[in-house]
Length: 200
Image 1 (tube, rainbow, N blue to C red):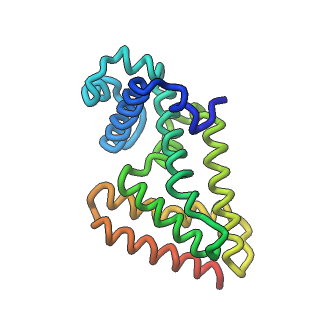
Image 2 (cartoon, rainbow, N blue to C red):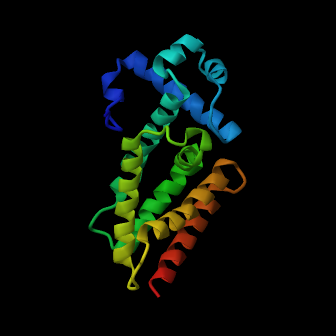
């Protein structure tokens, strides 16, 4: 099984550039319509590539969705999870991760939640990618559990609820329904408040 961050290493530079341009266009189309499948004709129009070139990169809608999910998980690992260090208290680790995730969603949209919850893609997303996502959630859940004095009977479920805070506020900023700086500030405040409530 291909590792989430290995696909780009196997592509020549010009092919990689086209590959990324197609994923960029798919992200824009996903934002525009809010669900899968994405029209390959619209991607061709946005990238200037022929449909045959797009199909050469992504033979099916499912291949394209998995590539988009793979790219976003790599971004979460490199832009969010790398901020978590043992030097910070657990609460601060979660706040740093929440802030980084909120800003990622604000700039590119809620790609992961949209893909994972899409009925068209049910049963078609790469199991290795879903395991990677679950691994991220488990790590955050362990940090959350160590940050609270009260026991957490369902730490992963609680973590998912807390993730909704930066994700929803990031989405509001992404769709220009809320000022980005205000969205980031509210996300940090609500997330801190949520963690504090769990510690009571």
